Length: 402
Image (tube, rainbow, N blue to C red; front, side, top):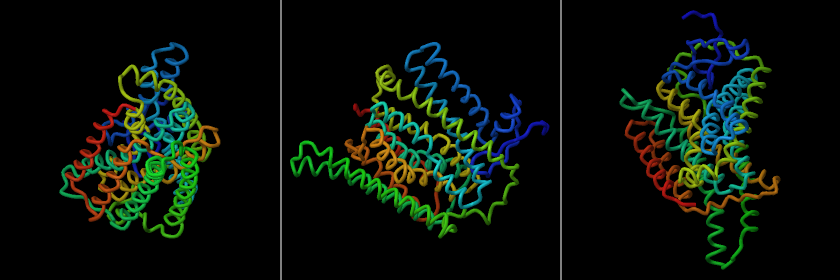
């Protein structure tokens, strides 16, 4: 095919696109791209984007059953999350390395945050906590496991920098500790000190822990983006040729796409939260399972696709940053922000994960990632192990009736 239509760079600024799409308009012809690196993934995302108007029509015109609305809205979030990533990456290219890195880590989990806020506003605190757990274990186990299996296909093993992976693993352990303390505190108050209603104390402790986590998050940004950039410099920089990049989007276009995609996600999140209870009743699934598996996986689908692609390029250092780094961001930034915002919304949420299975899952994810990151290399069997751990946890989540 010819080069009559412009092409847009995909997320992370490292992919060259070669299949143009029909120009629906001058604006979208500069934005929409087809990624033939994952079985036409760009076309799939474009088709899923059509679910945005479909979901709105189902909700406000057809007044379809809640299950239809939930499925259409949750799938529509996948391409919208991708547009947020693309626009953020384009802003990063214009803003420079330091500011660009800040933009990437700040908006990296925007989809999960917006979705969680609307679910929280609907009064589903337990679902929000399940979503937090699902995002942490999904990125660390499912996302990383899939990437390792895809990356090692036809290879004996892949290598990455142990120093970078070690820092990520350490932050993940800190996240586990911070999320376990409120639950253990609540258990101690109820069981050891016979406090029948420690809710107020739980809220105060959660606020204090949230502040500490955000401070650690800011310190991590300072360390990685300002004081020690080499720690997160791609380990593959000297072994992979830099791919020529198309011209970056103008800043106004990046901002416009970011704002529009975020607004659309907010609208879809409203539909998801409104249809949550009815969908759970119709399917026989618990709202806990929908939060910890379905909503969490959909919210992070773009990260899984990116990680799998870069794994095939033998860039496992970047894969670790995308998957484990996203889990850390959920624990150190998204969860604390939700606690703080919930108080501003007059609907306070604490960090007490009352279901022990959630704590077991987060701990298992941190332990498994630490084990794999220790030697600086991965094999296909380690990817299978990660997927097996996630599958076992998923089966347990399915049988939980919350």
